[in-house]
Image (cartoon, rainbow, N blue to C red; front, top):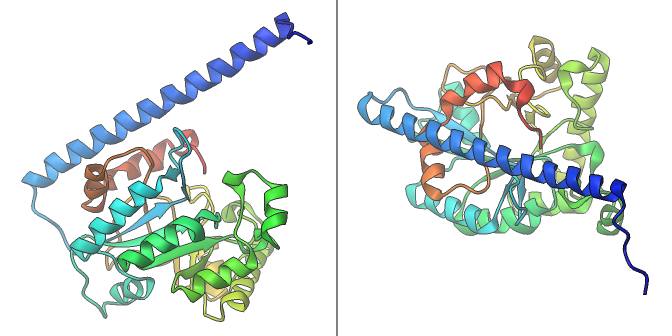
Amino acid sequence: MATAVNTPRAASSAARHDAAVDARALRWWIKKAARAWFALAAVAMRSVLPRGATSVRALTYHRFGDARRDPFCVSAEEFDRQMGWLAREKLAVSLDDLEAFLRGDRILPPDAVLVTVDDGNPCVLACAAPIAERHGIPLVSFVPAGELATDAAARAADVPSRDARLTTSEISELASHGIAIGSHALTHRSLARLPEETQRTEAERSRTVLESLTGRPVAAFAYPYGTRADYDERTAATLRGAGYRLAFTSQHGAITRGSDPLSLPRVKVEGGEGLWMFRAIVHGAMDGWRWVDRWLWRLQETP
């Protein structure tokens, strides 16, 4: 039997791998500590300050599963507890509710929540949709229409599971279960970094593809990445011209009646945090994280 030879090159490679793992773990714990501290401070302030006007928070998820120390992955158990709490509190609203609220045509409960999922990973159908449906929670899935897989076999062969996309038939299945489908551009590229003609193609073709798959109008868009470098007045004009009425960024904060419908904030829900943190997020504890979004966006991880 051949034995492994521990060469200097192999040892160096192993050391680099261990260092990378340690760095990711350290980053994970620092981020979790910062978010927890931020949320606790905000909860304390909220307890002594008067509540403001009625607002809605659009929550952002990306993936569901058991990935370790992946802030973009929420476990099925966590998501089930979160949706159960939203259902008991009667806080979840639909995309139509939000649009009517922005027009001033509908009154929503304080701290109402819209649940959104970005990127079109297959776990939306396998995990999130059944849980949301069981609890009666409206769900919005933002999908990069040009990256949809043709079938499950091709998807499994082509890309890692974290980067996988739904198939065209799965999009239709999601819509048949009452999940609202929105556009996440055509090819998941930063819209503001593209020429205007390419922006129009990304916006218009994505909407056309999704409407043909679902048989329903697509009026909502989520900017890929959604940092301050990924949207601007030009992108808003492009989306308006392509027929979109709502567009969501990744900037933290609450949506009020005065919010620009084509640059709406959202609040990211991360994996590995307790129900207390989720409840705090719903009640506005992470709204102030927008200052991190505003000044430190270059240091933030992408999905």
